[in-house]
Image 1 (cartoon, one colour):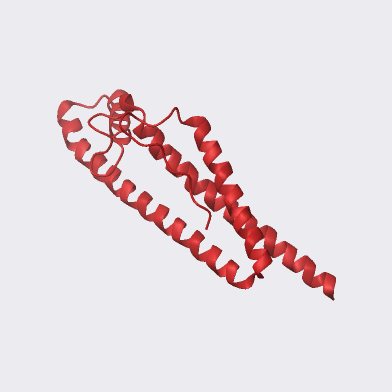
Image 2: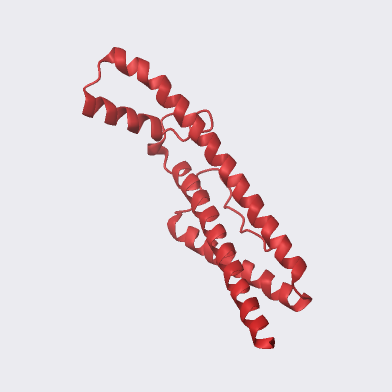
Amino acid sequence: MTKTWQVILATIAIFVAGLVTGGATAFGIVGWVVRHRALNPAALAEGPFHQGQPLQFGPQLMRSFANQLNLTEEQKAKIMPIVRRTATELGRDRREVQLKTALAIEKMQDEVEEILTPEQRTKFDELIARQRARLQQFRGGFQQGPAQGEAPAAPASPK
């Protein structure tokens, strides 16, 4: 009977570790993509953001439409507001999903910590800190440093 509970507890621990790792990785990658775009001034038309949305989406899509569909100037003028509106909606949706993901991960971590013994909490906090450190290291490998005038990103503190 004791072994059954140990197997169940180990399975739950593995599942929770996977959730934490997957959530932290997804959250980190999204953050890296946002920072990476902000560090590449050539990819942005006028400042880092327009109405909260990186400007790459609209112009790339418009070029694709124009090249593949041979759009007239009048058609381009009518299509561009549609593309901008969609880009704005997608940016808003993306920010909302990022926030919901971060909140869900925090809630899950809090709920898991309530169940753990003090010794397990310490290990759990260390596990999360290691995962965050690995994520920061992963992100650091792709960044070339902060943009001019920007301070380096502070590492995420363990929960």
